[in-house]
Length: 212
Image 1 (tube, rainbow, N blue to C red):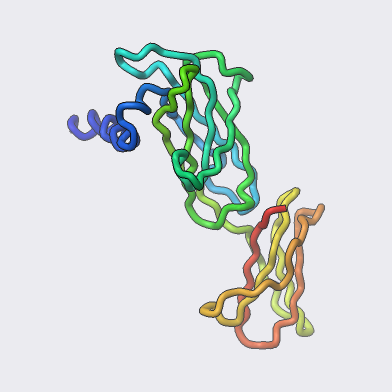
Image 2 (cartoon, helix red, strand yellow):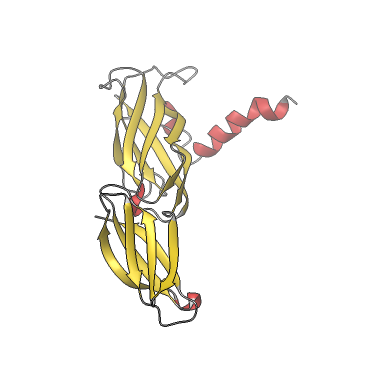
């Protein structure tokens, strides 16, 4: 009852620091990561928050002011394909050895499913710390299909402000989807409706947010 809980944090930290074990621990740690909400619809805004702390090194490394922080989605910050996005200090300035940081982003370019959000910080000496990550679950918009009336079916969903959608159709899921209509702007009423005249048989529809 003691060995596992007492040593798990150290084991997790060792795993996160394994890439550069003699360098990144000298930088600030990214801790207490959170996303709000943790589950969002495609196209929703997400608030990412964390604490970047340069005071956790036990000895031999002086604490320094946190100089900045950034996040990346689904790619670790050291990856050449990672897109690093700046985070801001919650109090308005990076001027302490421990800073609460935050950033808001829109999940409109993320596919449905679970995504990893990485956070990393750096101190005034240029040392980049050990990154941490938090899960974000993305789902598609809630879609309702009105049965065909007079040969016309209505696909409707609740839309988000400043979001653009694409509706795709398939009569054979193994063959994939083809675009029915693209670049559908969010309706000011919050409810979008697209009509279709299926030829008969089983028809599948997919609605997703796209980049504006």
